[in-house]
Image (cartoon, rainbow, N blue to C red):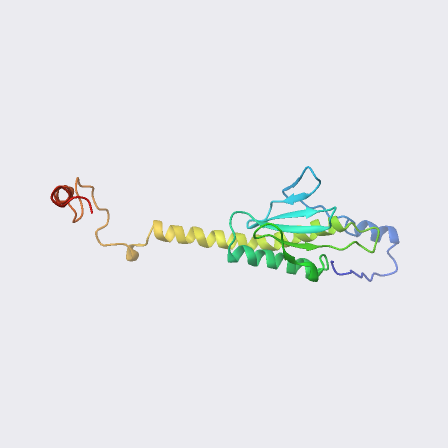
Length: 188
């Protein structure tokens, strides 16, 4: 849950002026999400994992986008740790799911009737994804730099030959020698 904000102001401001300056009660977020036929919410914004929120069972389930790896598991672990630290999921409910490489957790009912647990999960998920964006950008930048390093080497990383012209035959293995070997000795 977000921290409670306390604002101390001079007596000159009225309650109406303070209310006009306050943040909106429900923040607006934008997620790439879909709703399944049975009412589950699937969030596809994260690069490594898909997140499914089952509002009927009060469950959050994460699945790898492509294949399971250490990085995907660390992302799932980090996500549920984030939710647990913010009080959105019960820490003792985090466990492996029924589907291979999935992890799931249960989120509790809200004591306050004005708070929707599903909206709290969506908001916390949005904030987690926003925190992950710099990591995605950094990894993509490093990958691009590495590709450029190998594709366009600097002069000190290049061979002194420069561009090697094409020739009809190159290398030490002559195709005629291979044919002669196969004719005399047969396939290996």
